[in-house]
Image 1 (tube, rainbow over the protein chains, first blue to last red):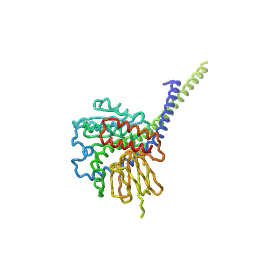
Image 2: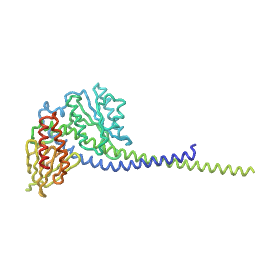
Image 3: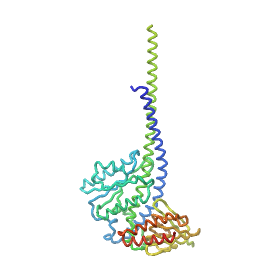
Image 4: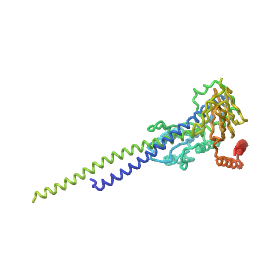
Length: 291
Length: 130
């Protein structure tokens, strides 16, 4: 059995850990509010963008000449996966969930004999993927320096992706991120952005004809790259909200567990102190009796 | 009948402006300025760098935009842009900064004619503001 001193030390160390996790929870809660707000504010933009593209692609008659970003290269050989994770740890299953989802997809691609290329956004994803898929990672991007998620960072990722597409480095692009549902639930998502997947039912819902200026094709070819950046930006916003939410609940759990541990250790400490006292008493009494 | 329609300007970070009493909006479209009044035909167009003028019951406002897409449909005008600044409370330093980076980019010989044209446009507009 551990000595009284040892127990005392352990109690105080657990208590200080608890203080740290509590503080982290507070910070995450404050950041979460901000992240959630900006995720909600960012939604109209990506929704509108999506709407416009839907209306446009519905109006395209000549699918042969449609921009490649919309219709794809016609092949399905090389898959590019953009895995978006956080730069910091201690956020529960946040990163692991994305990685798990992504790995499933990777396996599927490789089993089908297709080529896999990976771009990691955020350092944690790279750390977890480099051991198994190190050779497949063609680029890693991290925004450790930027304090808040901003559009220009997303644009950078988007431009990288488009550049690679134009160089014919891949046929299909999929992004992985966590969708923020609420503090406890974040749903890992895979979303195909090239070629663009439109939900078929909605495409022809708009019966009114638009006037285009300049031509439809030109608008589309300008709009699609923007849409990719926008989708990535949306993913980044969702991700940052999810990260904070996940961290908050993880730290909340940690704080609670630390509390339980302190209680348990305190009881043990009290018991062994009592045992020591009793032992001493017995020794004194039996000593007195023997006289 | 009223002559007003609604306008929404969004940028990636947030919904920038929401107005219900707009009478006319002049936007710097790709092929020249367009003024949009109520009951305009549905239109989708691109913006080049320039000034958006918004006329409403409550007055007139001007904004600088870097780029954008507009969609007009059922008397709803949506403008999507990556950068928008209100000319009223504009920061001269910021304008010069954008102008400088645009000029730098123009110095890069690898850009296409189209980009060159847009950059020229941008610099011109920024100069006129400053």
